[in-house]
Length: 353
Image: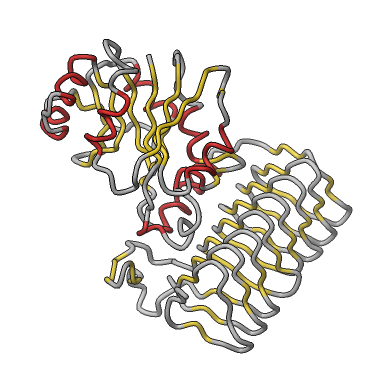
């Protein structure tokens, strides 16, 4: 059986974090989305990855072999219709069943296994399709003959999500996927160094090479990857994921993802936010996250207002974003990679250029 993973899309609605990377290469507790999904499927003969937008980053990450099985790639235009993609790999998968997934989602290994064990099935969450299918050879033949994919999918057995599934449609969905996984940590696994005076409680992972400086407080569940320096006087609150080589001083972080190489060495605050790689917070940078009326936050996506369904929503900053001292950021605002603020600026609108 082969696994075919579609990872070619631009994921425009998930900007700014997918401006310069495919959604499949977003990080989840130390591994990429695509690695998380592929590693959950057993009894695979070959992985076929359909790449398009920034596909070279996927090829570099996975290489020619994954979990001891060969990996091959098919490059398509990000705008190519899915049926056209199916026809590209039809000869390789002739007379076989395949697992097909779109890696703009995060799947539970439990639910992937349930679909993998049931040929002719697809994963659903209530009435919403989850972009995970187990197609038989006969069904693939129908697709290649021109039968619309939606017609075939309509006749497939529906397997309802029992564990978790997160579509990475919007940037806050990516935050929610990380929170889903960090809440599954149990106990404490400390591979780095915790200096005297630091306090750690609850389920916490601390990676190798990471140093927790004195008078830092970490309240789990929290995940801190390798080669970070946290503190002194940092406050890491629950549901926080900190990626590799992050340096924090007197920063408070709550329910957020800080990507690789982010730096904030002075007093600052981020909550319910995703902060991109290799950026920097100037002293006094604060993300707001709560509406005074307690309602759901509304934010712009592609020029249209979207109800996020969240009462707490912070900032979403791309890679290499630098904020100046005293920056205040309205809830739900986004900054594209490489943008910055002026000292004392109040960011009321998305910064896309």
